[in-house]
Length: 384
Ligand SMILES: Cc1cc2nc3c(=O)[nH]c(=O)nc-3n(C[C@H](O)[C@H](O)[C@H](O)COP(=O)(O)OP(=O)(O)OC[C@H]3O[C@@H](n4cnc5c(N)ncnc54)[C@H](O)[C@@H]3O)c2cc1C
Image (cartoon, rainbow, N blue to C red; front, side, top):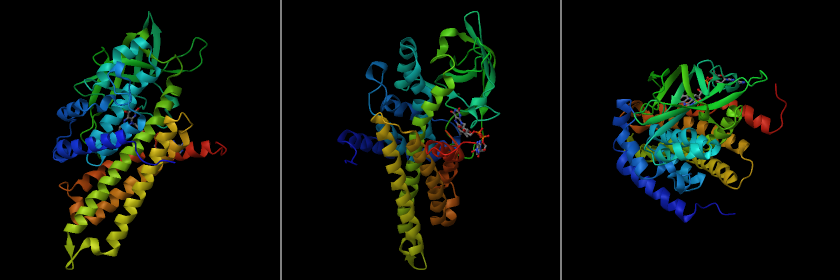
């Protein structure tokens, strides 16, 4: 049993950590205040090769393993969750469906600009009427004279409205010839008439990540924009979400680690009653618990990523890692604010931003309730 990262992974982690400390940390608060995805930071992440990590070189990637991508997401999230989710969604939701389910033509056409970070793509599954019950999709796509005609709307779609967004893949009901309801995934290029990107949401956190509502009104795209087999859109997307959950767990671990780092620093600087607050057992126990939970969550996502790499089942482990890591991230962020006292409530201190950024982790890419349902199902418990 070898629990160490490989030497390549360790080197890569050091490189990303140095990049985050130099280029991201000094700017994260300013970017958040601006409520806009900083395209110069995206460019720097692209130059580092982050957007192409898990894709083969022939498509502009570097052929790294999935854990390496997760390490990059974790390192970013230590300091800046908005950029971490930008990377996670770009690779996991934007490019990965093309890589996993696209035809060779689609891979060659769409993957290289995504893998090099010149372009971004989004994936639209969630609708205003519901995200957890994604099978209840209302958006429709009917085939007419060799074109899909799409009508409907999607909510909360990450990376869908940036200056370099090239397309969004949407799930839509495509009634099969027999009249049976089926869901398919279709690539919709930005700028297609009838495809409207709504204005940015005013979010609790992830202020400088890009999230929009999308609407589709008689949007026409060629029949060959179908991604994956017809009727397989929903099933394929569930596979994408299994990987996404490991990546979100990595993001949560990064945020939790960022909270630990800030608390260790602050509790040595701040004094009360003539002592460093870090000498109070109440503070020590809080930080020790935060560090322990973070380490356990890290082990959970590393194991899920390892199972995936081995080609073994990992659905349950991915759900467990996502559930545990997101819940401890919220706990750590809340405790980190407490350790900082009143300053924890002030935006100048990173834990304030971490606190706002943590809650979505229990919601996005499957809520905590949905994770528990999945785990119970994998354990063979009866389903209602
Ligand atoms: C910032 C942000 C970015 C996002 N990015 C994307 C994206 O890029 N693409 C995309 O498709 N989606 C995206 N989402 C959507 C996200 O995945 C959904 O919000 C999430 O899946 C929950 O769906 P919902 O909001 O419709 O909540 P609902 O499904 O309406 O759930 C509401 C509550 O009911 C609970 N619930 C629902 N069903 C059950 C059940 N059977 N048993 C018990 N409890 C249940 C839920 O757990 C939750 O607590 C994003 C969301 C946000 C906020």
